[in-house]
Length: 408
Image 1 (cartoon, rainbow, N blue to C red):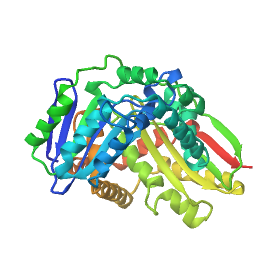
Image 2 (image 1 turned 120 degrees about the horizontal axis):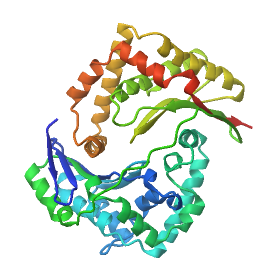
Image 3 (image 1 turned 45 degrees about the vertical axis):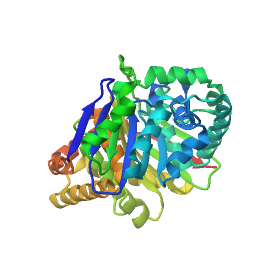
Image 4 (image 1 turned 90 degrees about the horizontal axis):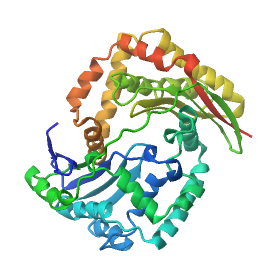
């Protein structure tokens, strides 16, 4: 992959991937998320993601929302446990318009009090809506189970009580303490000469003062396998099981990604989909999730089923994990698993917005981006013995935690 990279004097890293397209995508990825919140800041990172669109020193909310939409572009953002991203898509001739807007809302938002009041109610509605979706709620609750009471285990959205308590001073303090310039990456995918791209970037982002990070994130608490049953008034029971997993720096993370894809990936031929849905007809929605984080990670399997099928479905899931622990993949099985993962990665990269965010996050974490060729080589170098070792470490039956929402 042909990338242009540069570091501004204030520490903000810049990366540009040129493609032949009339549409461009750019984003600022910040190494700050809900994990960086103090106990009295639960939900703050996500709250800021909302309110940065509510006014700057020179723009009202309407002007922010219309700035790109007036020319057919899009402006968006997301928050995760460890990063915040603000990004845009636009016709390539509107790149400077998009970049200036990203800069304005990131560094010059003013957080008007009346807008904070309104947005708090919006987020509380989002929290309540989330509670109405047990298939999503159980994934976050499982991470709370795995990571205990620390910030890694807390829901990104916060609570109604925590969100209502936030003040404008709290927001400014959190930004000053966590939006470090050396923990920011500005990424663009689009058809522009790198020299022109860098000149426009310097015009806006280059003039900001440096604010470097001088401390590391605290470690998570010690993991202990736990099982919890909850009764919920739902039409279906929901089950998640899993274990602590490899962190972002662990070389085994790619092998675990392949195993996760094999057992419960998006393909209809995943092992759990075949066992639970196609062969036994006892589950509809099945998913395997591997999330690597800084110095930790989590692997989980989710599925929904009827109450009378809970025990049976768990036995089937455990049996599929045991198969991966007890027997190496055959050459044909390994070949198919590699090919499937490589194909999914290639297709995902066809979405250039996703590609831009992927490049930006990789550069943020590793200061480099693997090309598809390099990534394919790493996948092809995974052996059946590698995967067997990983399966026995992560799928150990004695280390699995369980969270069950049982329909009442």
